[in-house]
Amino acid sequence: RPVFTQYLTQVHSMLALVNGGWGIALVPEGAVRMRYGGIVFRPVDLPDPQPVELNYVWRESNDNPALKALLRHL
Image (cartoon, rainbow, N blue to C red):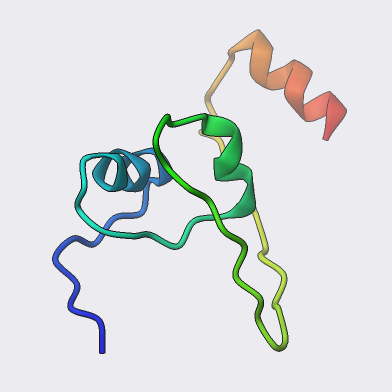
């Protein structure tokens, strides 16, 4: 039974703790691209993998032109 000492939601924070010798973490496959030196990534084979649903949100009053360009592409 694992003993949790840190509860994190940010992948880069998890990788930083692993890199600092604080243990292991379960992270999405895309975390490999963050290129932390000295960290070993291994796939986890699950009997019935479940997809992850992602959503995007923004503040209704946001007038940033980059947001408008992004929304045109989504």
